Length: 73
Image (cartoon, rainbow, N blue to C red):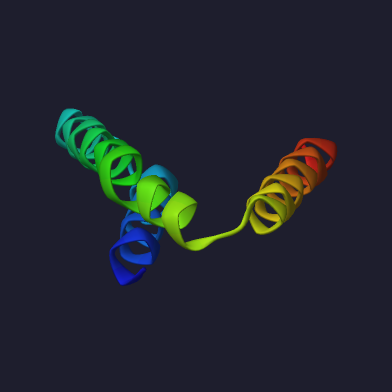
């Protein structure tokens, strides 16, 4: 979904930029709205459209990506 990609891009931009009180508030607001969107819209839609096997595949890919990112730190 376009909104998800836009939110992720904006959050990356904010985190990498210069921090201020305003930046922290924007990150907090955007992150809260984004999480609520994922919980209320994105995840239920994915669960309705994808089979159990497809959902398991998505979960596996996300888990592998997380482990890969941890190894790079």
